[in-house]
Image 1 (tube, rainbow, N blue to C red):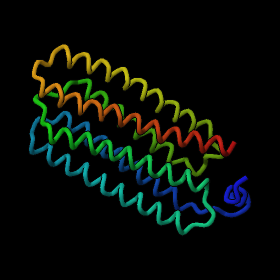
Image 2 (cartoon, rainbow, N blue to C red; image 1 turned 135 degrees about the vertical axis):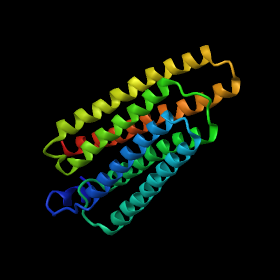
Image 3 (cartoon, rainbow, N blue to C red; image 1 turned 90 degrees about the horizontal axis):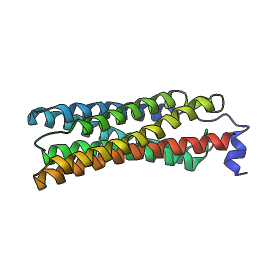
Length: 216
């Protein structure tokens, strides 16, 4: 057994990491909701304003991640393994980066139309974010409520599978109906990063499931 894992059994653990995870999950959810709004917006000026807000949440996320690493470096006894604290923070930050990237591509590419399946994928990202927020709210009870957290992780995995299907349907529809090659590339690139974002949400859930196993 690792020494820090051994110490965790007997020493009062620092709880300062949990509020940072909760704050990051809230950032992710707000950015995801703005992404959906941006995809539905037709005014370019309004799109720019929405993107600016998404970018601000992404910036806040970077600051939270930096704070997490700073606290980790100063903390002797952690609530769970140090590498898992690091990986969980990094994976949440990466998810936020992908949401930001999707918003950025929308603003840069300015597609002539937005497929409803793109909006459906973005709404799935919002659902992922809400579930992550629910998990982070009870993460400090992971030893008492592992089944509840695991069930939420399973739901995130199911969303990832659902978005895979949406993405396949989306690409089939785009190739069948979009005759402008440039517009096709724009839509494909935006759709791809939307699909990738749900993969990153699954990465977060996989890390959480790994933490649960270590407490078993």
